[in-house]
Length: 340
Image: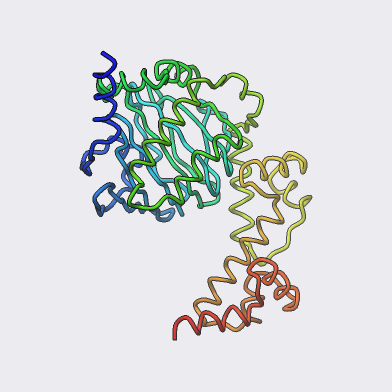
């Protein structure tokens, strides 16, 4: 009996895998998915809509289990995600931010190193990225697609998938704030060599499931910071206003008065949603515009400084050097040298 179990395990863990055209997890990304390329072990999809672009690389790790590398530079990829019975979604944030909706009127935000787990059964979820920048890993587990042989392998390895599914279905999301155990699992998936990547993904996925089997999910509830829909919508309006008027310099009090929200709540909510204080966010946003304009090479450094709201070119140079490690002049020269 034991020998048969190990034969089954060996067949699944070390068997060859081919790329499939019918990844079930692709439905999570909606109509933004536009085209695909393939190699021996994964499929790469390009995403595009009016909010930006992205790319995802999808691997079938085991029957019923897929792992996706996400590289998003868009505000959202799917606002009409349909419920999927018997499916759970696990997300790890490596860079940027991702919005998690609790019901229809409460929101929480993943930041670097965070892990979320949710059931897609009977619920509609959206994938939104407040900063239009998100890199991370998604794992989808379709319980109905897991073979009996795979279930025996999981049992052999002490993975209690039923317990994980049960917890995932209790509430909209469980969020685990950044910790060493979670980061250790996922960070190594970004440095593994290609020729062992699929095998490594399998090992790390099993490690993750074993950790989730022993995790006390309820103990992480106190780590959530929720924002109401009214707060979220108000702060989005604040964000859109300041980036649309990037040359202006509004005080916190002026913004508070304009958007009818207390300055304390506005500062707390903005940092909670976008990850940094208002002024720090706007400073980075301005310098990103400057970096783009320097790459285009059509405007002078003085003109660029004015376009992003710096009346003092020296202050612009100092801020740019702090952000990019060199002056705007040096950066522009490096761009020109790269082109030549």
